[in-house]
Amino acid sequence: MLKDIKSFDLEELKKEIRVLGEKEFRATQLYEWMHKKLAVSYEEMTNLPGAFRERLDQEYSYASLHIVREQISKQDGTRKYLFQLADGNLIETVLMKYHHGNSVCISSQVGCRMGCRFCASTLDGLERSLTASEMLEQIYEITRHIGERISNVVVMGMGEPLDNYDNLLKFLRMISDENGLNISQRNLTVSTCGLVQGMRRLADEKLQITLALSLHAVTDEKRREIMPVANSYSIADLMDACAYYFEQTGRRITFEYSLIGGVNDSKEEADALAGLARPLHAHVNLIPVNPVKERKYRSSGRASVENFKNRLEKRKINVTIRREMGRDIDGACGQLRRRELNE
Ligand code: SAH
Image (cartoon, rainbow, N blue to C red; front, side):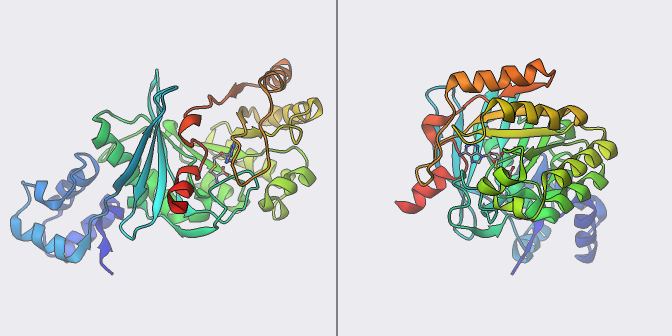
């Protein structure tokens, strides 16, 4: 198999280029073409010698994604892209337009093996992890497509990012590299279902990114009912890992809490959630569960979502309700890909 040229960071690319017998500054030029100017092929790289470009073309693969479908929400302009990878696999990426800029939600794997009961991405298990270049290209292709800069990235699409640790880390460093799109680390968020070793490892990298923990329950028993990963890690272990992340990075954790009607939306649970969030100064993001056809869960009503939020606020917790963007376009993770596969 050919080496994937777009997954090399600048240092690695310099080594590759040296082995090819080219001058080091060619690596910087090449890196800029791929990661700053977002060239779609070597042909565009007109300041590189023709013979060099030909050699690159023969010896390396050049990752690109193909847009299979684009759905634009009539409600809020959210766009959902279905991309095809070079091997034919399909992934989903979402673009949300906010007043403060363009935010993209990327996938980190094809499918997922975490098995959360309310989630569509995991229904067929894990197909494979994405390479760094495939994560980058989701952002690059949307940037080319809309002709505007992306200012925020959340790794909250299909897959469990910490189950693809090395590629994720490479991606985070490259997307925030000043030789590339240079997106501030403070505008990057990684969401995990709670793989404790990965959370601690990420803390030790001392990046300035936000870590979001998908908590969704306040007792181990309830969490095990909706998230199989809770059989491996207790909430106490998760809270320790969150405290460690905060200590190492100075970055506040976000708790994600998907409200499922009659399952995890009681007053008592709101109070217990406040109790978990307070010592960590964690921000709470409430997500009314997006019903998935194959799953039995229903969303909490508007009123109970508001009540849940108010209860947290009374306890001085910083809380937001995630805008339910793009619900008319299969907004929930994994729904669009599933529909395409079924058809
Ligand atoms: N695997 C990572 C990131 C992907 S999911 C994680 O678990 O955090 C991004 C968020 O959406 C997670 O909080 C996930 O639990 C939540 N989610 C998945 N399906 C959902 C649905 N149908 N309704 C509401 N939230 C959902």
